[in-house]
Length: 479
Ligand code: FAD
Image (cartoon, rainbow, N blue to C red; front, side, top):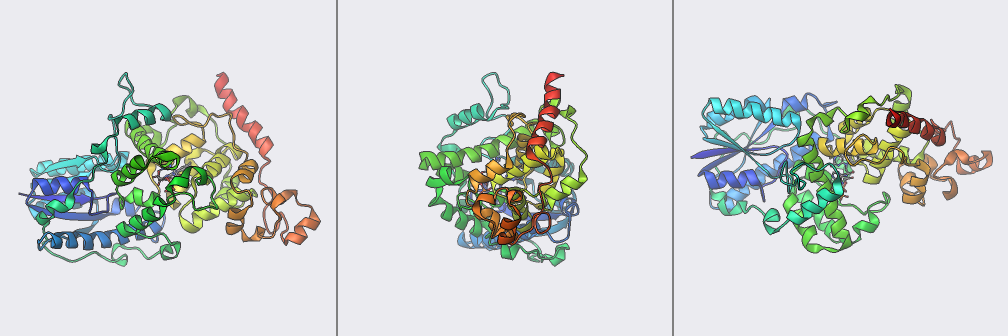
């Protein structure tokens, strides 16, 4: 019999649940990827770093599948690549190929669940089966529950239960290569379309120094392995190379979560354990999204739906355009727009600043991040924003409000990160770099920057903003 593997956010040819199960189940296995117009048409522009990243990964995957087949002595391999609505293309392709089954790895986003439901129904009508498998997380859906059988909403007990359930089996790689002889050649081999063929032009992603595809994911992980032991100490300082930079690779599945989690688990020690916790957060938010798809546009805690955020388009624009006058916030927002990445500490600081200093609804900030982040992931982004806005599960308590100046002093003490992204502040002395508005006229002229002219004065006063936020949330607590 024959089968089709539909690749989505799992763009790799090793340790792949759907590919493995298809190869075991059928003696002719086709592989496909669809540039889904439902997703592409909704993107803000026709030039998008994520489309570049995916395109590069698909080109590499096509070649890797061919090589895999060749090594197994088969003539097949290669991807069938289509452009169109996935919920039409996949059933059509499955019928054309005459396969008995379609295999894919599970996706927990509400829109993906709905799409997979449509695909599965269309396939069923044609007498074709659809199997979806766990692949992108270690534990999913109802696999980690409280003692009373409920999903967790607090991270620490969840992570303890998660760790307790972890064993060798959960992190064992699927030995795809053993069964690769079943890989079939695409019937019409037209290769991978170019970016232009799918209606896009190249972004600046070449300049980002983010290596793409499986090879890129591997090189980043190799580099990080040597630094993993220092992760716990270095991860909070954006000017330091302390984190893994693997998020986009985890997002698109060019690395295997089993390999990464398994490595950290076996490695042990404070650095690896702390990093493993971050991977557990990733599972946690995927699990939350699956149980509570309403969090996409509602507060996790319903009582917080009553919060009245300010309608403040000018402040929102200042935040988006890195003109808040708070250097750490502005440097972070420039990092986001210039690279599609933002350091985790800064995601917390800028999200807190938007919601608690500017009083703007977290949903607006979340959408802005969704447009720009290369690693944009609905579950993690939503979780992060609701954490910062205090509306989420296990969120930052509402009365704990980051002070953007103290955060800056603590996590970018010499202003190295700030100066990298805000060259206009390059000559501001260390003692003013976190709050340059405190410079007098003489200091400003020595530093070569006029506050309010070359660099903005603060758009809000933090102490006043803090009081407003306490009142905003406090009102709710009293109701
Ligand atoms: P590392 O520190 O090396 O961590 C390794 C991996 O663990 C990450 O690649 C990621 O997959 C996972 N991870 C780490 N922290 C978290 C977390 N808090 N929640 C879930 N997974 C985590 N992460 C995304 O992948 N996509 C997003 O869209 C996203 N949006 C965020 C928005 C806000 C407001 C906040 C506060 C956090 C967000 N995060 C998001 C989580 C985190 O900031 C990034 O995963 C991290 O900065 C990516 O860099 P890294 O790969 O070097 O991380």
